[in-house]
Amino acid sequence: MDSPLTLPGWRHAYSGKVRDLYVPVDTSHGVRADRMLVVASDRVSAFDFVLEPGIPDKGVLLTTLSLWWFDQLAGADGGRGIPNHLAADHALGADGEAHALIPDAVAGRAMLVRSLDMQPIECVVRGYLTGSGWAEYRENGTVCGIRLESGLGNGDRLPSPIFTPAYKAPMGEHDENITFDQTVDLVGGARAEELRDISLEIYERAASTAEKRGLILADTKFEFGVDAVGVMTLADEVLTSDSSRYWDASAWATGTTPAERMASFDKQIVRDWLAAHWDKQGTPPELPADIVAQTAARYRELLELLTA
Image (cartoon, rainbow, N blue to C red; front, side):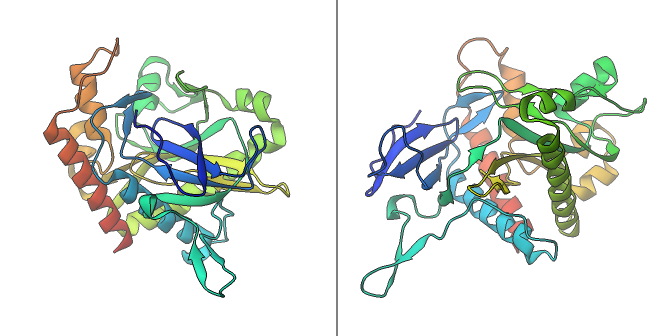
């Protein structure tokens, strides 16, 4: 994993699989900062492992897409404003000029955010049957304990989107799909319902936006935190190629096999290559140059299709 950067005014606090967190340098250890800097790296992960090498410009591409989606969900798409964790990235100095708070070294791939009480749940919404949901369905006829109708195939659209949460495991451990009842046990009934309802609302708005651009939002995951006054707030990255599955709508409609139906604009290329060349034991193999290049191209194409 990359070494933390030295950023003027900031101190490295934590590194996840693909993002690094910094707090103001004058923040006392053990004290939660009011503002944080979230830096998206070019690292890529699959099956909860960080892979080598990274994807060129991934941090910039995904940050740009997240910021675009935050803007849409704040009301630019005509829906109600969904609160998010972004903070003003400029401050008015003594000279009356607005000064950037994000260091030049990470400009374009960093977000200045408010500190939140993060929820221990990944809020996954699925509109189509694929991935780990398809694997569970084949075995049990369920997805995260939700019974589905029989006869569905890989890549099929679900009758309606479903909320299928996951427990956010500590660093170094694997996230775990859980049922809604287990979510209630973790965060309480009212909060579990709030997380479910807002996740489904965001998914349906985003799916509608994607559909207008010839894309299918097959599934996605959100993270939320509670702010200082108790408001549930959308955080982390949102609706990116790393946190979501996007498919070409025309390929899905006309394809005859799962592979043809699910031409993707996300890191499925990486997942597929890794699944074919690694038994999930020991250290993952290095990604070949052509897989890295294809993934970078797909990330860039998705951004262009959505934001053009």
